[in-house]
Image (cartoon, rainbow, N blue to C red; front, top):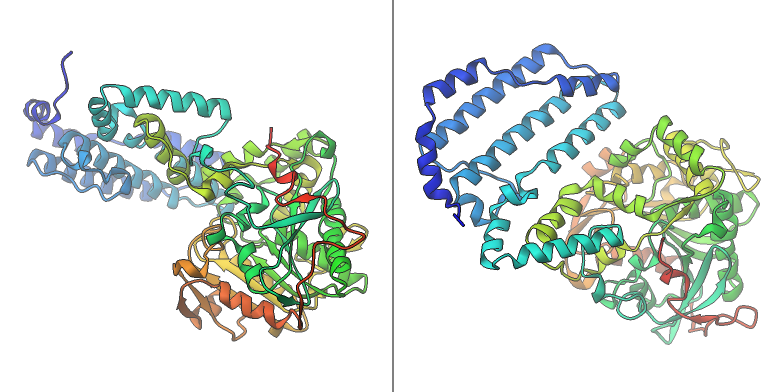
Length: 569
């Protein structure tokens, strides 16, 4: 078998090209932009012909410069981490291929950025082009990836055999493995904070955690996680568990563990999740603790559910909470980040037609959709390492959780999409009626701690900030906003012991997120102690640490309970 030797073959290949002919071709060659412009027309978008001409001219100049570098035996710069391996730089052909790909990528993205269209249409166009660009990277194919080829040679073909095996296993699982899933087990080394299930219904189990201090604050803390994915993002391992941190700070912690819906919940609605979910959990915690008011925290969709439930309870004349914490939560859906590309009238109507009157939104669809928002990090990175190079993904608790998908009831999901994401009705007082009550978020009268993550691509921090303008309508000074570094999950799960990242505070009221940021102060480390101080100030006196439940609510089973272990089909 003749082996390809890049340096030798490239040296013999280059003289076959006539530089004069190549430069002449560049002057006459026109890039075919018809497919791109056709796609734009589908979205009602246009692009100025003079802009296209300028982009083409810039492209030709850069392409000519790149070719001149190759003619002079100068390895082109490829400033992209996908091509950071030494194999790319030491091989002129592969370096040229990568540099050409990056040049083409810049041209296509510049075309997308130059589009004249509505913001939503422009975002969809840019997303579609970005998906194409990322998919066509030479790093994603064995024939054009020198790292994978080198591994193939070094292992005498074993890496390819392993890669094929990994791919077959993932096809059977229905998702790309981002972590060594055999390294984790719920209840064994994730979701291990000691506790007990003290209540359950068709929608959730309520976990009460064992105190770690002799005395605790009299008002307990209820955590409402998102029902998309599972609760243990808040209780991964002891060193990065928000649950354990809150318990160690002297709080009696209760947590909602949502059921992974099956056919029996195929007709469940948003109202059900409010009444039989969040409101039921609030009432049970108040009953067990014998407290009229508790502290409550909602994360992402859990924060939207919690806020809706509290608006209903306040409308009914109740004041069930002494404080509210919202982590990366949308209440005003004016700005929904890149996830907006999946939501328009046509797509929502299709979902309503298929599952709006009964059925399930499969968890695997959520996993695929969220991965497509960051394809290089969550898709192609693992195609390269798992399949092309035959490497085993390393154990990573957060990515293990990310793959542990959950379904959602079709009627509940479709209501959520239309009324919140598409029509943004939750922010308008009285526009929505839930469980027989008009929803007015401004009726919530309690101190609120609002957290956003600066690089969040699911809940942009500026959108999270808008909750300041909806809650405590008469007492805006009771709202406190804190901004953390990193993204939707990594920004939230940032324990103090790690001494990582930073956060920003500004206690002066500001009408907009930008105005708030201009006066904000950056602090090193975790935002958790800031939240702990807020929580302690609203948690009441110290009392003797309680036991699980009470005579009415007895222990059903140890934490983490059954519901969290149910896999999505």
